[in-house]
Length: 116
Image 1 (cartoon, one colour):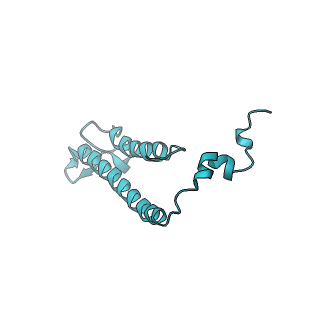
Image 2 (cartoon, helix red, strand yellow):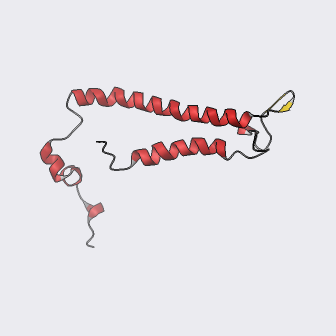
Image 3 (cartoon, helix red, strand yellow):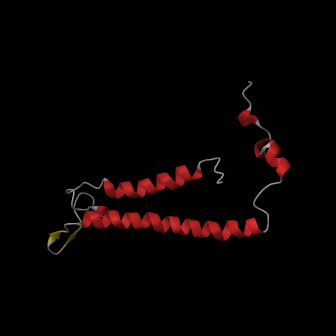
């Protein structure tokens, strides 16, 4: 079971991936089969003019970027969390978990006090 109480994956992972992909999907400067990238409203070009099919290459490159970022993140996370888990430093004791980390470790509880 994955514990993600602050929705870090939803905010940084999913929204970050969508931002990378949306940059390519909504690049509509010249037309649907062209790509503008860093060129503003002029298309990616070579000596013959605008490169036809560059949009598909850009979308493919952005998908590759998402997978590369995911792989990098997974690798770095494994390098940190696997040793912590093997050394039994990743979890708090059962009593603290039962009480809740907020009330056990984070004091004062002003953020959760609803009586004012």
